[in-house]
Length: 506
Ligand code: GLU
Image (cartoon, rainbow, N blue to C red):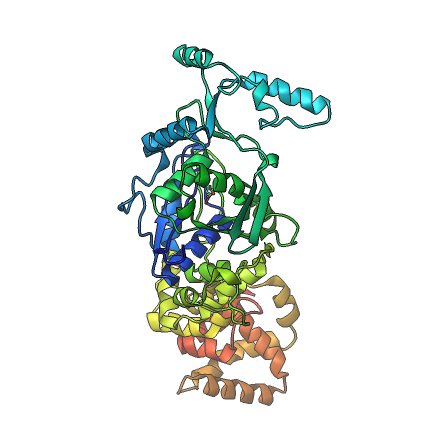
């Protein structure tokens, strides 16, 4: 099995936006495929038509595209093993269902939903649980309990039926999970799952196994929630005669809430204000769910932070480019236990990726925000401003609050700062300051500082006191980077104008 070409698939169901847990599954599949020179396939599992959501498939494609996971085969990309959408593969599933029935591995079941509900209720009343399995199937309405003629007649009459897998009794089955090791189970505890529904479509289990086989999938890498399905899938491979071509399994650990208690849900994100979806989801008439992309995350940062949810390279290294991840990734280093999601750490990653960009690159990202604010500033000035403040930013959008005063004069002054700083001898000093600054011929931070310091000394005032007032005049509050650099960058004329305006307006 080991010398097979690596072919992995990400197989989402188009039932809504893709949770970041799903994105992490896609990423681990992608990294594993690329590490081994294999193929990364996107298969759309849309056999449950009651849960189908318009737009979900496009959303999945856009999300993977944004994060740089190139799909080798899929609905849009095509490929040798298509169609890649399960609703277009009905005939294939039908023929394997027939094969399983003919070989005695599956049977028709005519029990109505009402009949089954009644059995469930009865069991519940007796404090037990109804299960359609080897113990009960003989007493239910199916092709194992009814005569061949009765079955024929029911089908001829158009009676709705499902097809169930006939789980063999008391059989010991072993399978290896590449992350969890050997998994053993006895078939006696398993029920007879529906593999084909009355709507003419297979259930997830049959379609998934048939497609993995037909698409020559070498490794099934998926979330832990599918681990309980593994025994049935192993049995299906056996029943279909594909045991030797069975893919290897690897079930990824859950992504846990920031508290570590339970699976990370959309609600956790809503509550704590972080996205749990890669890109924004805007269902028609429904509630908008925020995305990493729209919240200002850089795609490389998202890939990096997801990669460390359940995996590490065995060292303390945390920053990985996609190429480095491909090099370093291995399923052996994926953890069994759940990975706690830390929203603060997610921001830290974004900050790391933001500051690692050149000021010029950041400028390109920041420019649309400036345009949105109708600011048309000189590129050199914007780049200088970015260089001064980027260490304090988590997202590109944060740069606006940190730099707006380079591009426009303050329109208001922070009342608290005014109260604390604009008093005593300060207003008089500020009134005289423009004349002092007029004398500075070589306008640079050092010269400005020297001129102001000399004046402060002449007036016998405190340096700190004046600086706070000067900052208030230039930025409108008590924030911002080095004040003399701000003055230098906005220029002599603008500095003087802002002082005059503060004197007139405060
Ligand atoms: N369609 C399943 C899902 O939505 C795929 C599970 C698997 O990878 O086998 O997650």
